Amino acid sequence: MRYRSFGTTGITASEVGFGVWTLATGWWGTHSDEDAVALLRRANELGITFFDTADTYGEGRGERLLADAFGDRDDVVVGTKFGYDIYSPWDRKGHSERPHDWTPGFVRFALEQSLQRLGRETIDVYQLHNPRLDPLRSDELFALLDDFVREGKIRTYGAALGPAIGWRDEGLWALEHRRLGTLQIIHNALEQQPGRELLEAARRRGTGVMVRVPHSSGMLEGRYTKDTVFSADDHRRHRTQAWLTEGLQKIERLEFLTASGERTLGQAALRWLLADPVVTTTLPNIYGEEQLLEFAAASDTPDLTADEVEEVKALYDAGFGLTPAAV
Image (cartoon, rainbow, N blue to C red; front, side):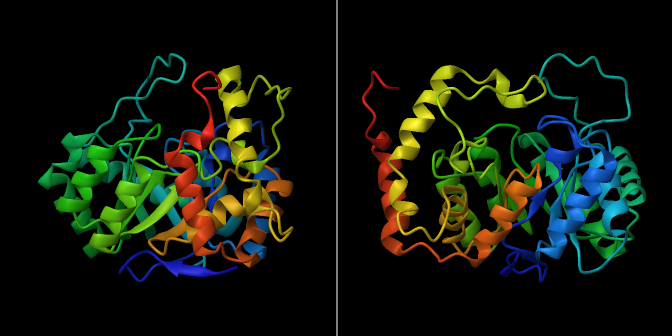
């Protein structure tokens, strides 16, 4: 495993991290607490030191799983998120979002609750969870986050953009006007915008980036076929057949990344992201030991050449050579 720092924060993370949402939310199948903790510990044995969660993942379950797995070990780096009100009643409808609460009183309360669930005195990376422009523009909120740093409750803070790919304006504004230690974005070889622009802005500001959904919801793992059917408890079940068909056509154009036999497509997808030094860590969707072993080993596979990196960009710019009828 190789390691990188989040910009100038002094916080080091494994270049392959672990997003705990796959274990805590039920969107990637069902995992018992015992199995989830075992997988987290196995990841650490393989060199993964950075684990990303949120208070809203399973209404605190992700944080509790990390506490059970690692306690307050200082060699395990934890990022969590805040902003959603998980403590008030909520009438959930489909994949709708919970209400946010960015008021200072609630944010301090949420921090204390996360610290308690994590069993830690300090959170390494504390991230605004899917913020719009209003909280990013709140001087009061960012003064409070600076207070948390001075109090030793967090080491740095950042923003996790979402929930879906995009949020260009929010990311660019935050990078320009706030001293973010980290920025979390969705970015991958099949979905390169607005990630390219956000990465360039982060580079100018010296902000370390963590990339989630690096395999485009599993497409770049190379396991799908035209007959793939997702289980009822898998969030990808709502995807259209056209998404699957088009994605399979695109990854056919990426076969040059695996031609040498030195890396799988899933590993190549991570190495393509890590070719950019502003990317501190990647957060592949790990929901079983098969994915864990493959993705953790990506750090030991050869780097992509500059030509390979640029060819992936060129393919994206050309629509992967698909005709309008195929799209």
